[in-house]
Length: 240
Image (cartoon, rainbow, N blue to C red; front, side, top):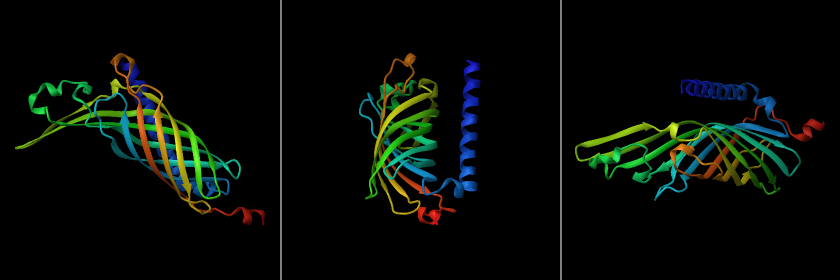
């Protein structure tokens, strides 16, 4: 057990260090990473999250943050990737039977609200077919590393509010894989901002096998990419 915790701590430390390094690289070398063929910058996502096989859940909304890098292979084909060091997911108002602990044994928590907050470090990889109109169709995969998961149980009563917060990370798999399909719009510019609408379909069980449960992520994702424009030149100027 101690060995697993040690390896997990090292993984998280390396993940955070790498993420901070990416931000620093972007700020210092944005002019080198943006060109007529490449675009690099900030990526903001609003995730509408759910987990399958949970009784009567509600979508959880959360904001993710990271960096993106697009490489134009041809005029129409683009290889895209991102580095999300904050990609929150989860579910709202999950059924009492989904709780890992006996909070609901307390009759005062029968009407409590429930929230499962999960956060991942993620790297999506996709290919996009870009049209001259600015629209593009994308398809690929998203690989995630879980960094934290917690259940929050809140009960509002006449005299105030009471609740619990429990770390449930050990009940979920460390890694996950999702298939991704998206409709993107690229605004005119060199480089230009983008709006991305993606749907992510979980391919791996979010729960560990020993939990005896099964559930797969389902995410509607609305994203905005903001390129770092320092030093970018047009292809015409380059030829001159």
